[in-house]
Amino acid sequence: MERRTFLRASVLGASTVAFTGSLWQDAFAAPAQNAPGPYGSLLAADANGVQLPAGFTSKVIARSGQAVPGTSYTWHSAPDGGACFADGSGWIYVSNSEVNPGGGASAIRFNSGGNVVSANSILSGTRQNCAGGATPWNTWLSCEEVSLGYVYETYPFGGAAVRRPAMGRFKHEAAAADPVRKVIYLTEDETNGRFYRFVPTTWGDLSSGTLQVFVAGSATSGSFTWANIPDPDGSPTVTRSQVSGSKSFNGGEGCYYANNTVWFTTKGDNRVWQVNLAAGTYELAYDDSLVSPGTAPLTGVDNVTGSTFGDLYVAEDGGNMEICLITPDDKVSSFLRINGQGSSEITGPAFAPAGNRLYFSSQRGTSGSSSGGITYCVTGPFRT
Image 1 (cartoon, rainbow, N blue to C red):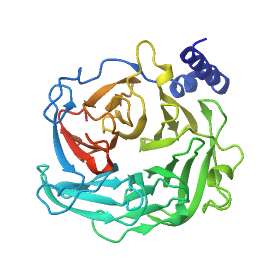
Image 2: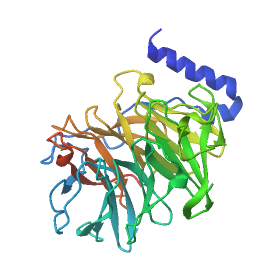
Image 3: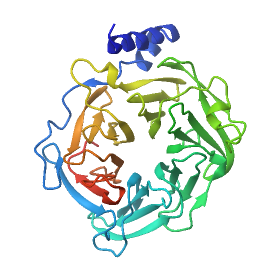
Image 4: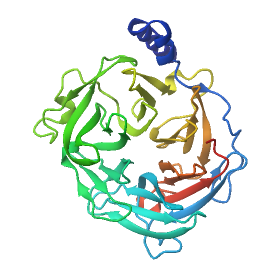
């Protein structure tokens, strides 16, 4: 039996054991399949080397090692995870720097017309800041992707960054805030990484709380629980090895929360996981081995974000340098492609507050070096 057929049978088989009736049908739809995108096919590359659907345009916002246009601030190397924050009539885009040592994060402020107003550092002197996540109280959680790494809470609107050791020390990747359950979800970039959540003692204050790990079986769907991590410091026993029965995930990457659901990606097996928090179940939203017929459009899954319409946008680390779109009805397609940058990866996708601009970076640009990063903005008729 081909791997694709075997995995599909495994997914459906595990589902029927765990659930029956309407809950089964709601919780375990098939993972996303190939389909034409809602915006149509990609056109020829524009002057920036970006292929987009009709009606969309791209613009270079910043380049590593060069001053952000309109400012004197030098943009950081290896731009990675990012987010947007509403700022009156404008907004702020923040971006991590995945270099070690050095790391840190920067911010670019835009006015209501999308023009750059200023740029500045919001974090420095850290290590390999990969992804992270925004909080409802307008801070940016910048995560260190190193052994025993920390989460740093940064302040795009002003203020000194603060280390948050209570959120655990491990190879952090991304974070996503859940204001309903008042927790922060965290991914771990290890081949046997775990999926965590941090429960603050007081919502809005990350100085203390409880780190918990996702506990589930070995199947690709089912129910789950959370268990406390005895020692969030991860020494001498790493956090991923402290709780028996915690579920292993192959290379945790991006993480995104909306509407009682959290999605996260695992690069080791090219999967997007979907956790239904209200029902207490999890399933696959995407698996490249389960795409049929045709070739899977999304490989090297990495950062993920979502639109107000409910579409997921998943950036590729490698592959053919695409951001792919997964619709609420489980259809996957290519939204954009960057040409001539095969030694890079796409990072930091984030929508401006109005939903009509998508920011992202090519981490190593055309040079293939961390000093060659390029940050873009795509504008167009996004579904909102």
